[in-house]
Picture (tube, rainbow, N blue to C red):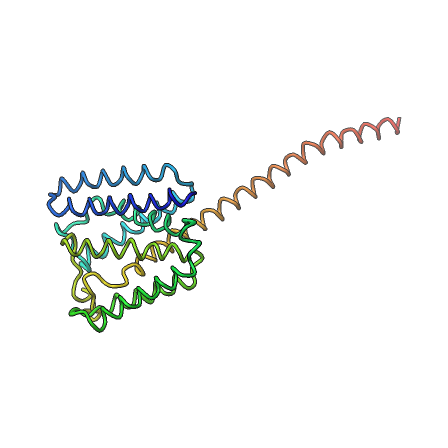
Length: 262
């Protein structure tokens, strides 16, 4: 795919996220549902030009992120949305964020500058985490932990540019969402009340990286299973073909033996 299309996907996602969060600032529950419908339509439209593998990855991210949202926002209250629910636009929104990060990461323009962009992303994430630990008026231990996770993804991932793209998209999303009050992070974790969190956590993109790992892991597993099934079917087909060929040959030799005996 060309850099123009990949970067246009990222641009569409950033523009739609901005529009949705601004509209959500004044939306009721019913209006949030319509924003959710619109977000689903945008996601499906962008997926029309994607491969089956990418569509599967996005589906995994949406399912995994939905479970995380209902657990940590809907149940535990690690962060709370403005209307104390999980808005309908959030699950497909996660799919859009992943697709944008993937589009940035696979873009030839980005990949050709990876030697500069990966260290620059690591430096920016580290600086942001240090600010949350030592400068911000609100201590951010969770952000520093997630920043370490992001550094690990940038160092050892097969596609580090995807995580660089995720840092850009997720950081923008979190700063905008918390600034306009779409959601608010708790001061400390609501379970043990030990881990301080920023609003937003500085390394949120590192936490989001686990969505990427889930997408890649499940997709690799499904692909491996599909190849195994195809190999088994191919071997079975070849075996059946051999039996069909050998039967007439055996009958021919049998006829020759009977003639010889006569």
